Length: 195
Image (cartoon, rainbow, N blue to C red; front, side):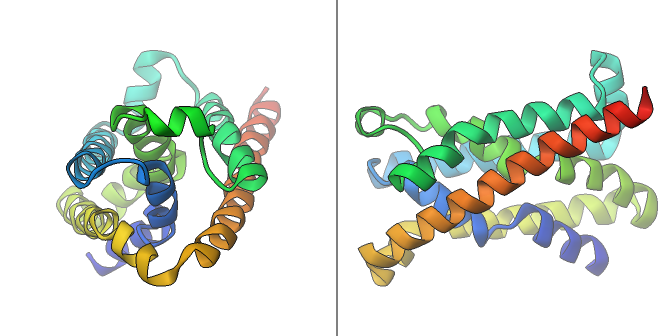
């Protein structure tokens, strides 16, 4: 169980995703911010459980290769990563004012940031290695930590201040860019190697 917990804590990165959640939800009132947090975490949970129980069969059934899945996830991350680096926020100013929880809770938060290709692949591997029960317990614990982190994101950044938020948002943008490019390159590399 400990191995699965530590693996999922590193892969799902509840601490690193606090800033992304905060930047997307900054214009929302507390109720809608919590709604977005719950939607993102529950969606990620459902996806991770499905992969824990069904693994690669889900993608096989849909006719989607792991390589294509990684490339698609990387491409989904590119626009918000670019905006974070250039503008310090994941979406244009006009869109941010009228944002609704579903506008960002499903994509990019639930997928690919929380339940990305690495996390989905890890569920399959860890289910085989440590058992489905331990894997599901680890997923649940890490996602509860993620939900708590999202719920207190505004308070955390209120304490840190605007300057730290601006710096951190650009740094997270660079990291998201790197993750996106890595997903695309890994997917393309594996595709080319397997053909």
